[in-house]
Image 1 (cartoon, rainbow, N blue to C red):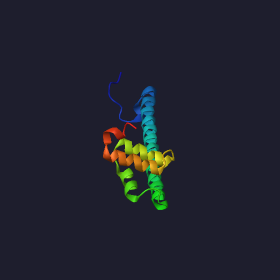
Image 2: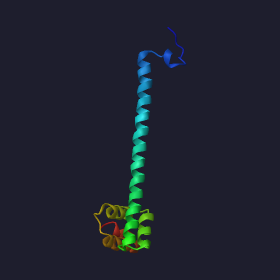
Image 3: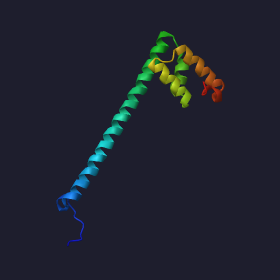
Image 4: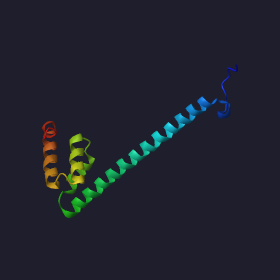
Length: 111
């Protein structure tokens, strides 16, 4: 029996070749899923920015409030901006929520 490690795929037996190909295929699938997820995240962020620009243009919210919602790193502000982007939160209500969030961050997340 030869105990040396083969240096090419041709030197690997059938089970080993299937294992190598399976691991390679799994790696490609993970890469594709990760790439699609990242593309969707970037598109959603850009759509949110366009929505806020439209709200500012129509005068529903101020540019400062839109900037605050977009630049905020807190979970509550992200949820508010996501709600406005999806149309489930009115821009006027979002302004009120953000003002409350700025004044009292601890209680604003509980509403």
